Length: 121
Image (cartoon, rainbow, N blue to C red; front, side, top):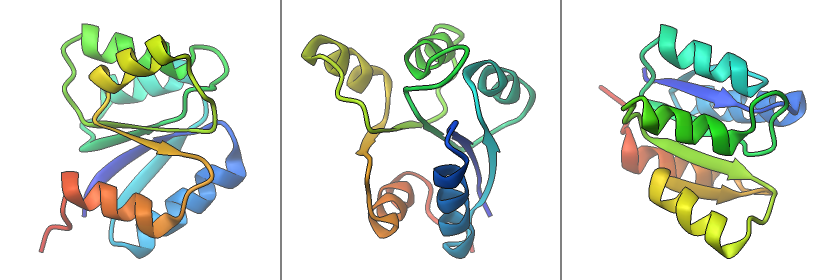
């Protein structure tokens, strides 16, 4: 199994994603704000981070920039409903490894994840 960190402040969406990941064979943990995300990434070794941009506390953009500034190369998929400006989108796409627009189909998200971290046998 793989460890995936879900950084999402909407509990309904976070639970939906966690359930879908579990059914696909992945193990995940949920945190609901940017501060907790940074603490969790520092304390644990994740194979992938699913990161919402609109977070309380420290927003997702700041979390992603902090991770990269710290030299953390863990793959990050942005999962968001927001539409960033073209310049923000270009910067985020350089820092992130993928982008999923809400609403999304779970099978599509799992397909993106499997390209980065296939299920281990």
